[in-house]
Every structure is written in structure tokens, then in C-alpha cells.
Image 1 (cartoon, rainbow, N blue to C red):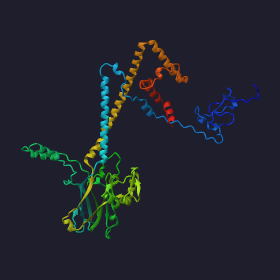
Image 2 (cartoon, one colour):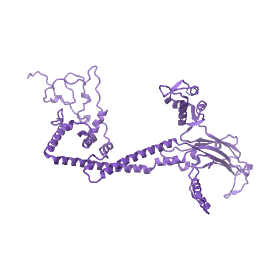
Image 3 (cartoon, rainbow, N blue to C red):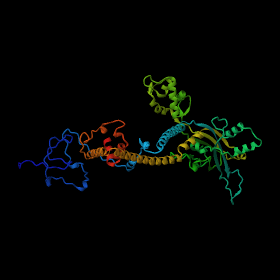
Length: 537
């Protein structure tokens, strides 16, 4: 061996050699260099603070890319292992009885279990369908309209015309007159509204179906009185805010003319009941004044879904002046279909007629663009304004009469509240959790049955021909060991091309429960899950 031959150091994996630089994408050609001891002066130093992982190249030892070659890709970090997902993946989920169990089990338990599984599937389908129907009914419930009567009145105290009298041991101070305004609202029992259900209809139907007996009138009256009435929404439920504005006067103090505003608090998504301070039928306020004042009470509606005021062009098409956003879109769609304005080839294309041109300002448009284009023709409803004069004079208070207003308000169907309570029933959630626990226990039992059936099949096959069975079993174990060690040949081992492993279809060994369970256990390991995640990326 010539002494002047260059010595090729055997660098560890991941480090470049002293040979000329080459692109990382270029495969290595030719036989590997001679293996030999590495000189100490050429060994790369490993520092414990560099945090090198086995098989990961150190950035400071990476070779420079060749001219024109793409930059080397940085290794992707391994995703963190989710312990909860691993636990769920290890849990068995199969609840199907393996085939052939009924042949080795005494009785008809397997047949009854299969019948129960079919019944469970039909019951689950019916429950899901009914819940979807309820959800659809909740979103499509038609609003009812009831009459809300509002009474506005005021009282006075310590006015100049009132006689001075002793109150609590001291005399009233002349000229310190005050007033107190009360605003009260309640829903009326509107018998003329056909959408309002009669709460006493059940009692009346019983009287019509059967003959009236002597003395039944008193019992019927007692039933009507004892029957609990359905709670109605209170005054504060119908409005987002209530504002009281005062007209300016020269004699009143500026602080007594400031506006008064009440706003409804925002509720969490899963809460439907208002707090006690926002659930009321009446509100009142008091201030100082010795002369009559004009006020305006502004009520901003609180409706779900919210209604909007439509522009004149949009109102001419829909023939309504107020509607919800979904109602407007559905009305436009009905108008397009009624007038035959859809495109011949592209059904989403709309040919605008004169009325639609006035709304959208174009000859044609696609229907998905219509909801956004309609926003310019929809504005919030104007607040309800109720004028009232605060009277402090003696003539009015000799015989005071309140000011009464009747307004129509949207009222949710009582059945809708019951359906919402049904869908959000906490007992249903608890029942689902209990069913999930029972399903987990059932899956464990089915897994134990599957393993018992596999052992039964194992020993049954061995008892029929022990020699042949043991030979085939040892060959199978040897093939598995060769596959794990990476020593298996292309055919899969000595007997890897046997008929049982070459055969596919539903009756092959690759579709047996044992094979599926083995694959599930292999994927449940953290290393296999991380490798699968890297492959999917």
C-alpha cells in the first residue's frame, strides 16, 4: 500500500466527508470508502449543549449546496404525542360478534344479541331523525303577534299647590316639588288573535263530549281557577333598550333634563333567562320639577331573528315593508322562480327584470351574491316612540288618568320553548355519557369473545392434525420474525408465497379479526402514530 495515498476518514452518519462538495440530492455512486480508524484530530466534537438527535445533521457541518441546486429542506419537527388520542385509539371499538361464535355457544344468546343490535340501529336512526326535525322546527317556527299594552302615569309630591303638612316630624319645603313616572307593560289576552291557544279548551272539550251533570258548574270553575296558566314574557323581554328623552325648558335644571337609558344585558349563548334586575314588568324614575314636561319614550325591539325595514324598491318586489334577512332572501328566490328569471344553462344565474334592476343595478348576477347585495336595502327598524306629558298641576291630579298605548310585539310560540328545553335537556347529555360507558364495556366484552374464539380455533385446528399445524405455525412465526428483523426475502420468507397468503378476497387471512386487531395495536403505538403522521404530511 503506497504511503502517499490519501487516507479516507470514516465520518459518522450525518457528517460530510473531506471529498469535494456535492449536492445532497445527488445519490452516492460506487462502493463505500475503506473502513478504518478515524484520526482523533479529524473527529467532529460533540457538545452536550447542541442537543443533537441521533440521525439528525448538525447545521454547522452541513455541506454547502452546489451552484444551481435547490436548498436542502429542514427536517420537520415530530408532532407532539396526544396522550388522550392514544388512549382513545387503544380502546376497542368493534361491537360486532365474530362469525362462527354461535356454533360453539350453547343457547340463542348470539342471535338475541344480533337482534338487539339491529333494534339499536333503528332506534338510533329514529332518534337522530326526530332531533333533526325538532332543530328544523325551531329554526322555522313562525312568530306570533300579541298586543302589549303600556300604561304611563305619574304622581307628584311637595308641589306648591299641595298643602303643607307635617311628614315625619318636619314640614314640607315649599318649592321643592317632585314627580314620579311609572311605565308598565303587559301582554293582553287577545281573544281575537287566532294564533293564541285557548288555555281552557281542554275543559270545554270535556264538557262537550260528556253530558253535564248537576253540580258540575262549580267543579268546572274550580278547574279553571286551579289550572296553572302558562307564564307570559314580561315587559323587558320585548325590548333591547328603553330611552326617555326630555324636552328642553328654561326653568328646569340641566341635570333634570338628561336622558334616561336602560339597556338589556348580553346573555351567554346557552342562557335564555334574564337576570332578576333585567326581568320586570314596570320601571319608574323620579326627578324634581314644578311645571309640566313633555317626554318621549323610545323602545328598541328585541326580536330573534331580527326584522329589518326594507327600501321602497325591495318592498315593491316582496309586498312587505318589514321582514327578516332569511325571509327577504326566500322572497327574492320565490320571485325569481315565479317570473322565470333563472338562466337556461347555469341555474344560479339570474336575469334581472326592471324591478330587480332597481335593486341590484345590473342586468344579471349570480344568486350567491344576492344576500350581500340586499344588505344595502335593509336597515334596522325605527324605535317605537311614545310621547307623554308629565302633569304636575292640581287639575289633572284631582282625577288622574294614565296614558295607554297598544303595540303589536312578536311572541315566540310556546311550543318552541318546550322544544328548546327538550334539545338542551341535561338528562339527555347524562344518558349519552352512560350509553358511551356501556358501549366501551360492550366493546371490551366483544374483544374478549374474539380472543376466546381465536384460541378455540387455534386449539381445534391443532387437535385435528398436530404435526401439520405445528409446522405451519412455526413457519408463520419465522416469517413474522424475518419481517420484523428486515431479513425477509421478496417473496415474504420461506413459505411467504403459500396459498393462504396469496389468496385475497373476503375469506383471506388479511381480513380476519386477528389481522385487523394487530394493525390497530400497531397504529396505536406512539412511534407508529408519529410515523403515520409524517407520511400523511
